[in-house]
Structures are given as C-alpha cells and as structure tokens.
Length: 224
Image (cartoon, rainbow, N blue to C red):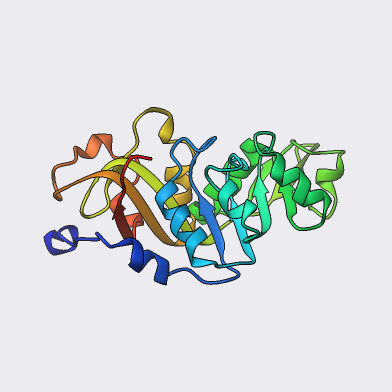
C-alpha cells in the first residue's frame, strides 16, 4: 500500500497531448471557467484533434475555457447546461456546425455521478411533459411518473485542483470544486492540472476533494 501511495503521477503537457485522439468524449471541469484547466485546453487546441464530444457545465466564453475548442471547430457535440455566455455556440448551432444537447444542471451532474457510482441511472421529474421527455423511459413509482436519465461517462476527464500531491490527491479551494470531483469519477482516464504540487503525504486528507486513486496523470500548471 505504501508503494502504491508513493507513485508519482507528474507528467508533461507533451505527454498529455499524446493521450488525445479524434472522436473522443471528454469531460471538462469548471463553472464559467472557474476551476477549468486552461493549460490542458490550450494543448487540445494546439493538437488539432476534432469531432469531439465535450461535456461541461457551460459553453465557456469565446476566448476562454472550452470556448476556444468550439471556436476552433474541434467540437462536434456539446452536452451542457447553459451557453448564454458564449454567442459562438448559438451561431454554430444555427449553422449546423455544432450539435448542442442542453441538459438541466441538476440532471447533468446526477447523470455523471450515476456513471461514477455504478448506478443504472437517476429518476427525475425535470422535463416531464416537455420535449426533454421524448425518447426517454418514464418510470412510475407509487403513482408518480419520473424520467429515467441514463449515466453519462467519458473517455477522458480533464479537471483542476488548486494544489495536489504527487500521487494526485487534489484540493479545490472555494468555487473551483464545482464539477471537478464528480467528473473525476466518471471517465476512463483522468488528467488533473494543479497550480501547486507538493510531495506525497503533505496534503491533509481531510481537505482532499479529488482522491488520487481517481487520477491517472498530474500536470503542474501556471496561472493564466
């Protein structure tokens, strides 16, 4: 156990770039780019990968967050809760360049959590009797109807921590926590960017928001 915890997961941006492939489903942590690993997104832009399905709380801004990927025409499908901060999304959706799937924020995070927790889905009343219901299973419990929303996972999650140890135990300060810990549960591979990296054992376990056992690669990033 001690040897496992001593594993150093630090890697470079160049090594992160080698993980990227066309047609990937990628979760991106952050809320209005707060807690979004901008340096990792910059590498994705530089890599030129395309036909991506991006799962994110929002559409970012035109020049920040996943907005950079969208503006660069690298995103085929965007699964998100709102896009009002990025007018590029509406333009590309209307022109047929981008498929947009809007999901209520509570439903979206629960779908991701369901995947990470090994659940078969979540039941919700949100969307009943609307277009959201089309094509989905309605489950009746004690005379009440619920929509079954299926789990949502990804090939890769890129998340951010304010600081972390070399094993990948990450701590999010304040609102940077948002979607990051839950997304780290629901992807096949997890890459975490952190502004500060300390030795294994130097992070108080009671402060950890993203456990190192979920993290495959750790990249030290600079302030942007």
